[in-house]
Length: 96
Image (tube, rainbow, N blue to C red; front, side):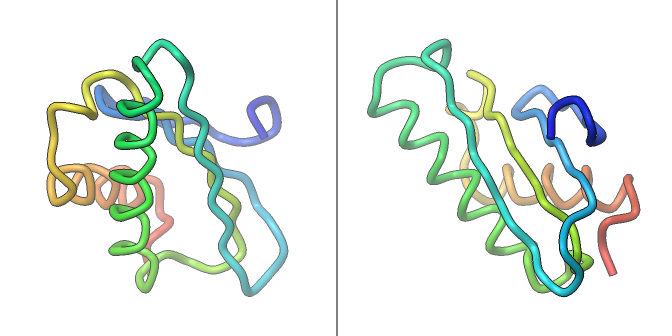
């Protein structure tokens, strides 16, 4: 996905996306040790999951996503992450 897909970088996360099977949306989250200990990595993954779930009804079907959280995501709440994710998706034409 990293080499075939497209990449969108924000201060809070990096979004990779590629065409997938029609009619479904898949999400993968990769949180490296650079973010911090396991507690911080899990919090970052929870924030990304909550943000993606709030955007899911509006996302175009047929895409696979991989989101890599950055350390700045830990200073945001879930609404802020959701707003930034929605903006990144809409800027790239992935919102219906």
